[in-house]
Length: 428
Ligand code: HOZ
Image (tube, rainbow, N blue to C red; front, top):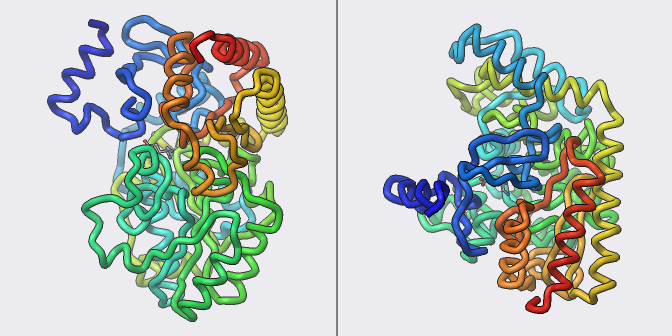
C-alpha cells in the first residue's frame, strides 16, 4: 500500500469521505487522491516521492507557481510579527488600496477569508442596498457553498451529479432564480416574471466551474444593461478570473463594469483569503457604516495579506506575465485542437487566457446543458492515464485547467506528447 493510500484510509476514519473538500476526492474519476507533501514551481511531489506537473495550482491562486520565494519570504516575515491580531493592521490597508487602485469598479472593499464568504457577503450587501430579496444565478456557475448558491451549482456539485444540495432550507433557495449562461433572454424572462424583486444578478464572467465556458459577444454587456435598466446590481464573481485574466480581471478584459465584485484565493496567493467590493454607495451599507452586518476575526489577517500583497505587486510590476500566460494558453489550446483534429477525437477545447478545458463531447459547449453532454467516463480514463504519466489535471470534467507563469513551453509540449500517446493508445 502506498503512503497516499494509507493516509486516505486513515483520513476516511475521521474526515467525511477522507477529504476536506469534495473536489479533492477522486470519486468521479476513480482511484485514490494523492497526498501532497511539497510543491515547487509547476511541480507537486506526493508523499510517495512521485512528481506531477500540476495544472490545478490550488484551484487558481498559484498564478506565479508554487513556493514563489518572494511570497514565501513575505509570509514568513509577517508570521514572525504575529499570526493574528484580531485588530487592524497596515497590510490590510495596503491590500485594499491596491485593489481599489487596480480595479476601477471597486471603490470600497472588505476582506474576508474565502470566496464563499465573499459571495455570501456581497449578496447580503446587494439585498440590503436594494431592499429586494431575489438573486439570479446561472446554471453551472459555482459561487461557493453558501446556502442560496447551491442551486444548479457547478464544480463539485455538478461532478457529484446532484443539482442541489441537501440541507439547504427551502426558504433559502426560494429566492434564488436560475438563468442559462450565455442566454440573455432567460434573464430578461426572470426580470419580467419578478418585476422589482430582483436584487442582483451574479455571474462568473468566465464560467470556470462547469469546465470553462467563455462569455459570448454581448452577454456580459447585455447583463450590464439589463441590470441597470431594472435597478438590480450586477455582481461579477471573479474568484477565478480576478488578477488572472489581467490585472483588472475579467471586467477589464471584457470591458464591462459590475456594481460588486467578489475575489478569492488569488489575492491571498494561496492563503485563505477573499474580498468583496464595489460601488461606494453599495459598500457603505456594510457595518459599521451601514446596517448590513458582516464580520470576521481572521479577515485581513496579516500573514495572508503579506503573501497576497507580495504576489499582487509582482503581477502589477510585471505586466509581461499576463502576456506570457495568455500566449501559453493560446498556444496550448491551438496545439490541442490540432491534435484532436489529427486523431479525430470528438472533444471540445475551450478557454481564455490561462484557463482552459477539454470537454469530452461532440457538441460545442456554451452553457450548462451542453457541458453536461460530456462523457465523464471517457474523461475518467483520460485523467487516469495523464496522472499515471505524472500530469495532474483536475479530477473532474467540470473544472478548469490552470496555467501559471511558471509553466514553460516545454511543459506544454510534454503534456501534449502524453495526450498524443493517449489518443494513439490501442485501447482508447
Ligand atoms: N472553485 C474551486 C473548484 N472549482 C473550489 C475548490 C474547492 O471546492 O475545494
